[in-house]
Length: 262
Image (tube, rainbow, N blue to C red; front, side, top):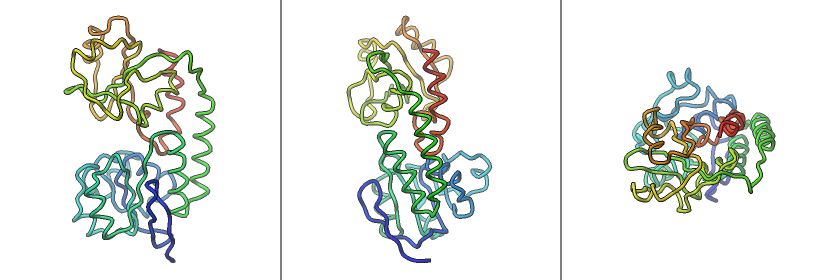
């Protein structure tokens, strides 16, 4: 084992014992990727939201949630690599962990960022070939989803019910909407809260209600249909829109099927 330095997506250099044999993942989509890269033996800690793969979720030590990390548990596990994400994890927690352990952070806004993350994690965990296979297949799948920008339908994507929160610009989900033949009607950045009056003033052609982080149900479809009688209201799988690891292998096919129903 030797020391090797890598650069994360925040531009920070991370020096690790290579290859790492004790990995903790702080992000569900990246946890799934690590398992799909064949790192079952190396993964020693995940969050309570890292539900895929299901069998590994049951047997792997939990170190809290993405926003509420149990730093004492992490210290006890003594990892030689921690993998997190700028948006998913709290800055203060990451700063604390960085003082004690090698912490590699992703920062993802689009498909290009996601593919770069997959390759970087493959290089860092000595799984270059496996990462390249996943990346190339995702890229091919999405290339087949090319849409004409002049035919994109105006859409709203909800992530929370009360207060009502939607997806704005500078988000990964915003980019994924385009692969469904949709354009985001929201111009604000990140995840703005909208009052009832603001919502009524909008005129979306399509409204998507995500399964996560808030689990929208059929009853919500009816509520939103009353607000926009002419709009297409759909319940959608939030993992397909927001998980930027190996889940993207399935996402393109999901988007293709969804776009045909809109």
